[in-house]
Length: 210
Image (cartoon, rainbow, N blue to C red; front, side, top):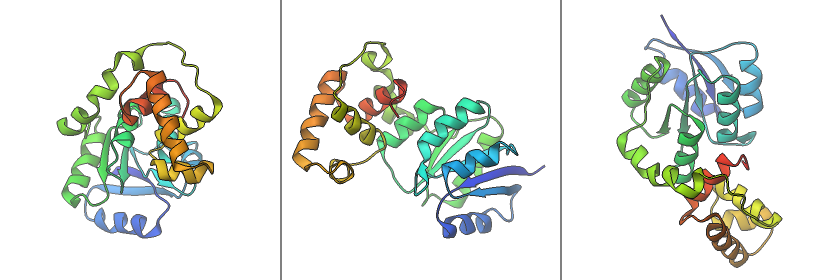
């Protein structure tokens, strides 16, 4: 019995590479999508055994797509496949219910093992990966329902932080100075009651701000 896989990545070379890498194992790529919208459209017509999902795509944030997929198809395993070893991405992926997080330079054997494990209902998270985000997920303030009075600009900056952008990238995206972004980030961390960007990102996810 073949594992039916949906690949979501906006780079053709990645999609072709995956087809080649998985051609001699019990995995059948039944669909390809280049954006979150295409992936969600595919899932209205067909349900694969597993979704292999990129994060940074031209057609939208893959982590936002993960949240939507898990909302509509809670039992469908989703594994993130990213070029970015970003703790904020990992924390969001855990918080949103991903079955695992792999880097694109991982060994073929690790990719195949993760696909088999997660398609069978298991998890590909390692202890080290979970340990990296345990503190962020367990922060008491994050689990609370306390409303935090963020300004509109602070909310905009927080959304960008939760997308994994650096201060420099946020400054460019919002057309404000780097120093202004740094100031907003400090205000956000203080108001939310957390100590780093990863915790702030998890709080934003749980508050449905991203």
